Image (cartoon, rainbow, N blue to C red):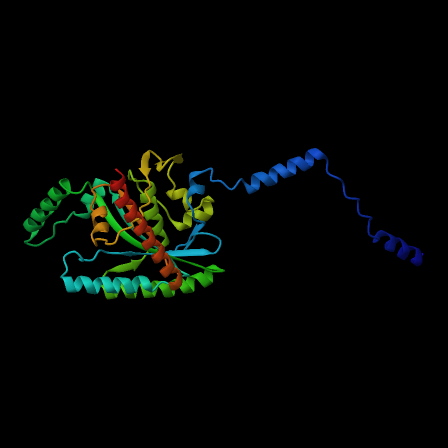
Length: 325
């Protein structure tokens, strides 16, 4: 009896034979292929959020631009270059050249100069001087009225900001964070040598800047990083405009605003140091981006020689044209 019980127990533990794999029908294969295709997408941006070219913004100010590219931004103030003496201008220019030469070929640099409109209420709030319990309220009131009059006759409420963004490639966020921190320290020290006030931007400040660019008509920026996890949204959902529309030449639509993009290539034997300030002095909303990428010295010499050849060719053509006419 005991032997039979053991035999039955062994039979009960015997593994069942696996079912043979079922072949998919043609309709099922097509359905699976369609699901995979929809998940992968066609590689094109179909929403305003997908049009914004970055992957993730972190609270400390680091932005993951692509799979291996990370960037950080430093905001800096203006310098009284135009009012300086000739010797001081030379010193400032040389220090600026040393500053730009600090970046090697592995670092991409972008200088951004943004003339941005602001809401009148915010501007009036920034110049409001509250009264205090002393004998100087009359002076405060007079100064406040003077600022309001200047605001009424001012530059259309434009706020001018300047930023420098540097990007590197790294295998992970941790590796990028350590190197970006070193570059940021060197950038701040170089600005200090120039006598320029500068500060690193947090992730919130970078998103607020992008929100202002994507909403030139104004609007309140409401965002907190703690909102992302419970809402399931991304940072792009808080800064994206209602829509983008491209394909009209150099013109584009961003929400209800129409803008234009121009690429400027300057080939000239002499360049005035006021060219950038003259562009930024325009009393309108304009964004100027200067992209800087270091190249090898040998390649740079070859590029300069090619440009000189192009200039000589243009000069000869201009001389030949009147002779033919």
